[in-house]
Image (cartoon, rainbow, N blue to C red):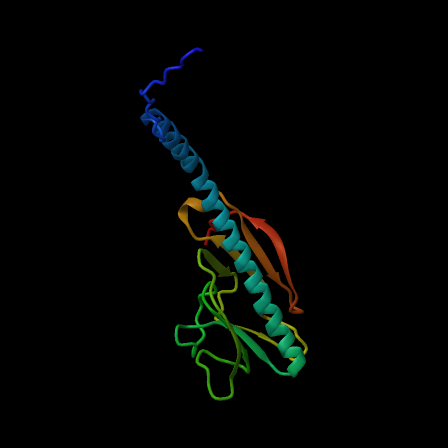
Length: 185
């Protein structure tokens, strides 16, 4: 009968892990992807901010017009200061929809319908340079018609297009299309 001998020598189990070369290769790939992807991600954020601001302006202008028609009263749209008691000329800040004439400072006859918060990362320019605009009870914006220009705020985003929003005499709003940013004053 054959005898089998057992070896008492056991093989050392191999320890799991990565070699230094494998780690360096993976770290190099991650660095290359990060350098390649971060500018694209930044541009995506700038485009998203521009789109959000266009939507906010359209919403504010439509709300002001519809409120004027529904309530048969004059409605004012203006950028608000920090305490929301005065109209200022910074259209990329918070916007107030106010039932009433709302001169530079609000008074007791003015009722704030809604305040729309600002969108960060964009600049908004109104070609008329007015602090406010008004809608008549018929929904007309006569005398306040004009163009809003929305551009990405960052200096590195100048190759990204902005948007132009057109407000007609009848108070209707439309997005005209892409514009080159920055705008010349």
